[in-house]
Length: 170
Image (tube, rainbow, N blue to C red; front, side, top):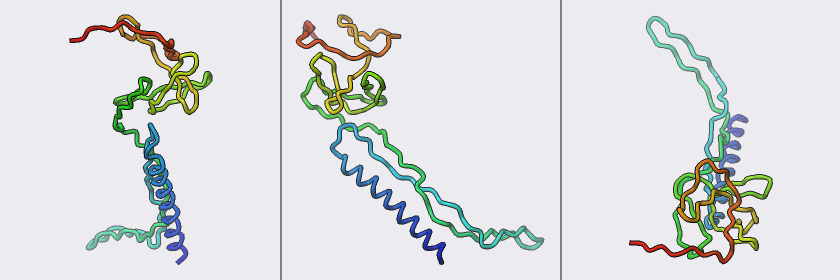
């Protein structure tokens, strides 16, 4: 009797964890770059009441008689699928299509995000407005637009007021 209560309680506790993950997904529905979570479960040990018997001359063997002792949360995974791209009209808002992350730095450590809502700081660096961390990357050549291979990532700084000559398109 107690084993069935323990199994039921473990199911309820793990269902509560799943509801917490769903609640977090709903609460962050409008958070830029948020990646939803998913809860997976696994079976806990099973108790054997009667062991298996081997095959006899005229009959086959009998499987063991077991009952489960509950379940547990196996993992809470982030789902890194591509979200929808949205035009904002702000020139510093960026997006990554496909795989990849923006790299941000606080000067000591690197941080990764898919949220591309950046702004300029007072010195012309592109920064995350919530943390002030500086966007990192490789700067393209100002004339050819090509990104040199083999160069290290660096803080992205665009001097304020800098203009580029217009190029005719066809």
